Image (cartoon, rainbow, N blue to C red; front, side, top):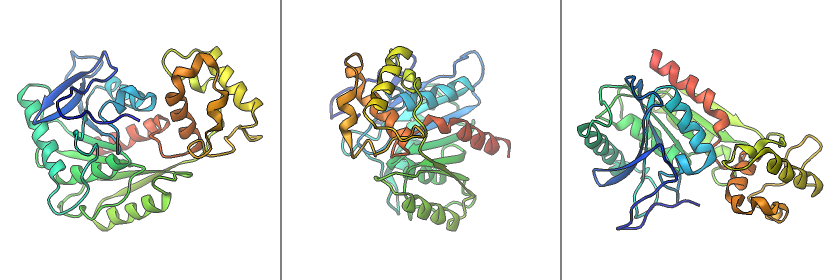
Length: 299
């Protein structure tokens, strides 16, 4: 699990196409649009989950796939770090210090010509970050946040203060044991009650395909097939190709990881969690997220 850096340490991500900036006392990973000669369409802010860090959005396969997609579409992508003390975003009310802190961070970055505060902003977070994203989207007085995505998060009484609350997309996962779907459903209702337009998306278990693990950097299709074959041979898959058991709770799958993939156990686990519809961010939702954001930009 990735964590925020300790006091005095520099947060370092595995990214050659991103820059770590220090702004208003906070580390922020900055990724510019692919075509840097064009004016950015806007800014996408990505908020990590509990115990993670800004690096989640580049060091993890699923986070990078989302971040890359928005860069391809011409957005500046910012991944703020929650900081060294708790590795979590505050979700309480009244007076959310982290929401004010993000605004201060954006003002510092604007002063450094990293972003234009007049451009629209979009917010997405996972888990604890998912709960925080709509809070900041509603409270921000620095940028116009047009929409927010709460992926696998829960509800907050902090919502309800904005005159024109932005729409929120809630993403839940069928087999989530960390934030059960019932909590996300309750969060949807809280957001509706607070005046937000709400959309929802549910992740269901997917069949494991032989080439799925080749999306992990440096894992080729032959190695991906070797792990897939091992899962089949070990009777880890149902007749329809889905995982029989929750890979978070039943970790016997680790025993069949091929030797050539032993250094990729964390990345393989991420893929298995997504395939089982567990508590992980899934880049398989990225086109639905893009469509949701595009609709907000067009309004």
